[in-house]
Image (cartoon, rainbow, N blue to C red):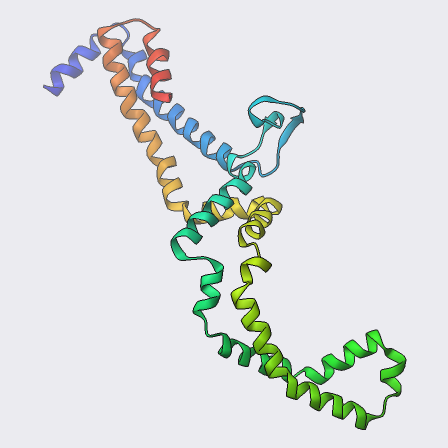
Length: 236
């Protein structure tokens, strides 16, 4: 069967031209996918001539990678999806033990408390603190040491139950991604590296298969317009 098909192809007047179709479509498909992937992530910053009031949100005559251009919107969607599935930041804080957190923070601050007091007082009241007798300073240190646990406990409890009023996690991440669009691109490339490489490599095989189909079409319809026509369909 295959030998008869091959013999029929060999006897076709445009046999040599037909043989070039699969490798050409393989290369074109590979190059097309490679360019599409590159344009998805690069360039990080807009490259071209900026023009105001462009339609469809375009920045001008040029290009910016889709991922870096939409870094804020993409990061916002990611945060919304993550928080809806995993829980809000308020729920994370409440799941922790506030009293243990307060004890940990107190122990950390307490070991450096006297140097912190000195630093603050010298900055705000240098003349008073530098001339104050050490015995008085010792009493101030002792008083603050005694009050620190209750102050820290109240602070941590207040932070735990009102953290979303103080920290907008979504806005913080979106602003970070917009200020460092390269970080968003690196994140996508690191997570989807295997899949992206697979798409890039398999595109040549797919293009070669399309080329064989185009050979068959050209054999039965020997019109040159069929090649670019079907190439446009495959590319679309």
